Image (cartoon, rainbow, N blue to C red; front, side):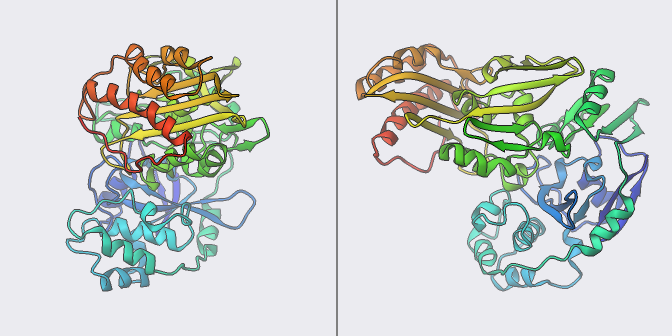
Length: 478
């Protein structure tokens, strides 16, 4: 079937679309919309930022999100609207005029991305409630300086957004049921993509194509295409599957569907734990959080994924689903070894459950990275201690960046459990970290740095619990 979407107010129908064709390549090479720039090709610089509008079922509105076109795959636009900087018009709109008056553009290469991020904020896109600095954290500038850009964003008023015409166009291309397409690969093979319309259909597809790659937000797999130059053969896109996009909060805990985006889960995770909310705020830029999913971050099994250490420390459980049924496990058991997870080819991440912390639980989560915003962890430490009458009765401690998988620090936990919550115990626990991990050295930090920093995070927990000041700026060195 043809891929159908709306681009800058025009209907688009495309055949012969491969699952790894990127939105950016389509915009620049096929649609001639060269205002959208190609910078890093990995979702880091924001020069390619566009806005994607998704119709809300049963409502006459679109949800707009700023995303990185360089790592979004073209089939992910099916049934949606995309707005580029070209689509804002040929003259300066009020936002662009404000930027010009503030001296917020020099070479202009990154400017279209800044314009689109700020335009999204102005029209009430996802994340519009955030401070302008958070909205722009995923946009990098190499010559202007951020002061004028932040000033322009702060001065620009909110804009009314009328999506009636776009919705009318999208209704013309709306097709009930699943979607699929295929294209020829350079080696003569066939690439296929599927968009199932329910979880049962997803399970059936995985049983039929066990080698298929499941893609939700493409913030990881997108780099396989742009950096590793991998030709994806069979892809199942699940980012808009309603059954995997639900969030349920109860007195017992928080249940999050496997395709819930980080931006959508942020508020609920912050209510569960302020430290967890702060961690999520620093996962990539807004464009990455608008696309990347919690389930995808878990399923890719990265040893430096930000979410898993915190979720393991909080006692999260994971539910996998296939045509054979469901199975649930502690999240920590999902990670077996580097690049190996406890998931059969026909299974997918259906949901995650995070129990509510108790009133006597002390939670501390810290991420260390070379940049404060929009950077990969060198070390991520997460602690959940239950303290009753001055004694630590339970302890869950997990780290990322310290081993081949996100992992519990069991010997550190043993030192903590049944010990008084006192400086002497903390000192022993900080030392026990060295018995739990033998990290590697890489560009993000040396092994010695990681061990020293992990021990210091135990002390950071103590200082925070005592109400003592801790440094906000966390920078990885070594």
